[in-house]
Image 1 (tube, rainbow, N blue to C red):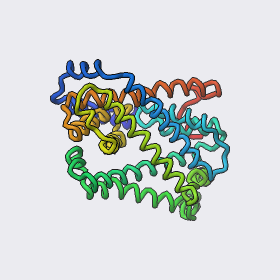
Image 2 (image 1 turned 45 degrees about the horizontal axis):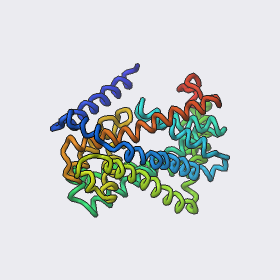
Image 3 (image 1 turned 45 degrees about the vertical axis):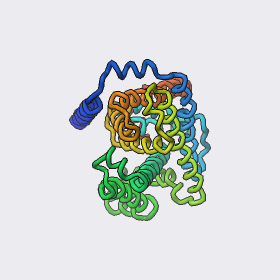
Image 4 (image 1 turned 120 degrees about the horizontal axis):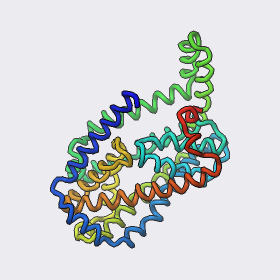
Length: 343
């Protein structure tokens, strides 16, 4: 393990410890387990099809992103790749962002760079959607949002979240969709490293292919619709899980509250450096339920634990099954290496 990996592990562990300490304040563990013991698991389990449906819709949207590349893609492969990536994230943070496009590219016979660049576009869409959702919550329910996340002000969101994403989009667009990228390769890199320059030119070509959705406005409406459906399928299970809990405050939550809670949890998941957002997810869910429904910290943590188990536990199990399915097609742990990921 190199120094960078050690630092990353230490940072992740430190944040996990802080998150666990924060969410355990004022919590009666025996009471929390009693709440979970008396939860209606039938109601909680009824949201499983919706959770799987959200992942299926994400696979459908991914195929939409890849439509301009003219590669023939299959929904089953896209879904399996998405679930394998989610399962990997529960073990090693963010690893699924590399594994998912690699599995998909191997199975569909496309360049890995094309698949990875499409995932990058997808992540930009996700962050932009989250920023829009944060802005809506700040406008419609400013008091609640600031109480749950006191550090998130409009100026902070603009400077620390929106501005970096905007700059990333501009830089990527200039490098990939204008002669700037090739010019940099020819004038700066080729005189010193001709072999590297040739590889970079090929990468730019495949990356441009993976990001070609940006130049297809006719598909924007479809992407927006698919993104809205994904978020609805994320919010509904949260509301259903709250109805399964045996305390009154959870039953006062409306779908609007569930949508606000989804935004709050999404902020936590986006910044979480821990496997499966462990600790961070529960902490954000707990705080949201305490503020939105007047629940106790114990009740909030019980909700966070159950919601996390349903979402991430299901992702791990389904992802493992998808990995077994894909292993029959040559996708193995041995073939999954840093060298193969680079090709």
